[in-house]
Length: 311
Image (cartoon, rainbow, N blue to C red):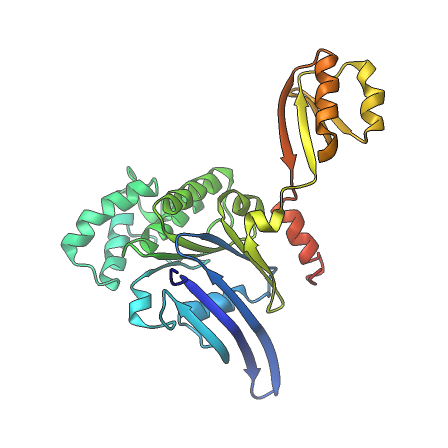
């Protein structure tokens, strides 16, 4: 059995305000695993403990109790650090540098030689779709371009584990797509990706596994399929719905919406055959039949309500 890329076992972290005698429990007995080559979303409301967890993974902070392993090593171990690429939520950069110059600077910090950096940087810029902007000062970059540059610096050492803290924060739709495409390319390359994000519709498109925490406690963890399930309803799309079919549809409890793309009929899974046959017999063309499952956003709100309390 492969060694997990990330292991948390009963991890507890308490912040203490010495002069006030206060204790704030940021994490309480949190346990989870992330398998190699998985894309795992780490979700929770503000103040849930996500940043603390990532800081512990990176070796920036220490847990008070529990056991943590990153790529089989303790956090902060040089052998673990060599295998990690990290993009913090607010990626700091020297805005008057160009992207190649900034990446050369980070390459030196990563221990790469000048020849290694020179051969690697053009490929990285192409991978994150920044080729052609090599002479442009970073101050002129859009937010999406800066995020992609941050991902490029995280990939300089060809890491096995990539940790991304809010990689889509503040991006417009074009920037969201660029970052999503970059993450998908990493996924296809077999990298393990551990990402924190508030944009759940984007997360749902790219993740294999989801971990949800709230107020420092694990709420739910599992594969995306396990979390969302197959659903108990289907959506049937037809080119039209003859008026004489409406009463029968309503008796079956169908929800009907019509738009320029056709008629969308949502009905219980057990009635899909009846509805499809009714449409065919009425002369309608059935375009598609797809299961309707709970979205990740709906599940998140069920587990972590709008007031921040776990459901």
